[in-house]
Image (tube, rainbow over all chains, first blue to last red; front, side, top):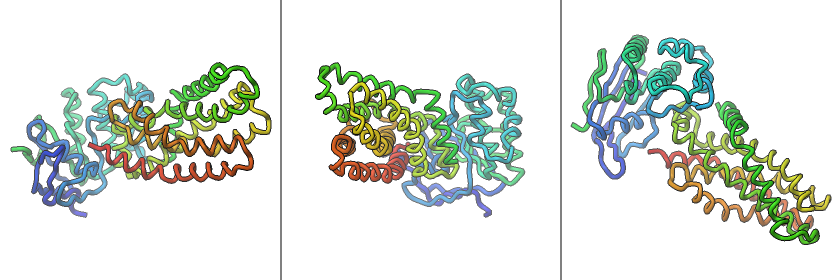
Length: 186
Length: 212
């Protein structure tokens, strides 16, 4: 399949308000799209539409296998980070690699409830990196990350793009690297 | 993934609040003789009904932790993205909830039956009625938990929803324990089966509807 994500004339309505309509986009291997726009312009809604967690008002959406990192941690608070992430990871051993790439290896035995905001963010990114899915959906991936975390995310994203993956990221801040920019609510 | 989800839910319940409904069940069963008085014959007559009321109220206690925590922290969303259907999540939740609720309740029913003075021949029927009824009760609890997840004052609303829907189980369950000729056990089994069979679909639809 040449496209990993395709929106065709999609409209999104939330709470009676039309967020956007006639939105078309497509993401192929090696492509990265940065969703920008003010608060409430529909960045997160577009991500959830892409993930299939929301239904589009109109239009069609095609997607490949994907992984999502958003504000929700979705890890058991009482477990150690390694065990909590292992619930989601496959059996192919990518998890340790992903944890090392985000500098989480030294936190492997720490209970999830003790993680800081930035560490929790790294954990959700590690779940995406370990998923093996070709399409990554990142909702505000920079929230809570320090400069080291931002750099590690950049490295992960460029490696993923090089290996034929695609990334859709919503962020009101600037993202480094070769991103196509899509402005919502403009 | 389904097996992992059931194992996870059972582990979390055992490590957490699984003992609470059982303790509650014992307390309610203990209250009956205090409220009714020590007349052994009267107690024996109402014992099965008392046990069932204790079981119903105990089923209410865990409702807020069955679905809502997983909805709030994104676990239900991630399960969908890992290609687990919402219906499968519902089935797993019912199975895990029964495993941590049913056997413990049966265990607690023994001392409760002793307190209420249930006769030996009626004890077997009462336990059989509980064995058949608790899966239906667990399914009902998970369905109500999914329908009320994310709503304000979900706990109180859940009580108002669950208790009336449990009336058929209560009638046939308590009836089967009281009278072996009544056929109540079969009717109770039918109600329990219906609840268990419907639960994955109700839970699945409720999870999808609660997404924002």
